[in-house]
Amino acid sequence: MIRLQKGNGGNADTDMKSLVAAIFATIAFAGAAQAANIVNLDQQAHSLQITENGVQSDIGIQPGETVSACAAGCFITMPSGDRETLTGGETVEIVGGKAVIK
Image (cartoon, rainbow, N blue to C red; front, side, top):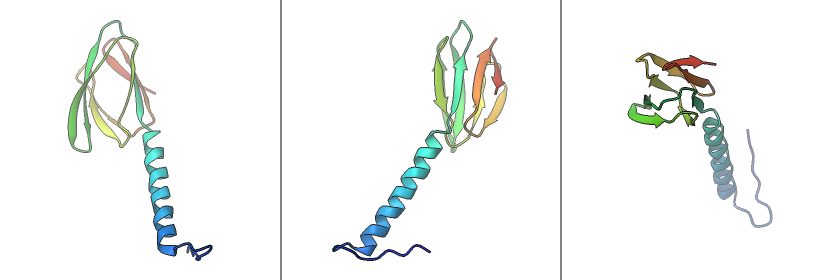
């Protein structure tokens, strides 16, 4: 149990709200750091379809480009048509139009 005390004119309710806000900010930042990195090692651009939190989007990735995605986990459809599940933190390399997940 966390017990906050008033001190120097402080307000325990305000202190608790600040503590809760800091905890949520830390959790949000940690989640963002766990995004998957997708690297296009091919000589041509590719289009990927990503479904994250029920929202579907298409992203283009140029040759040699790296994009970050799926911070909250997602389904991703690769250029080959294969569908993969990512949880975040993976590195996905596109080679010959196919995904290699590391």
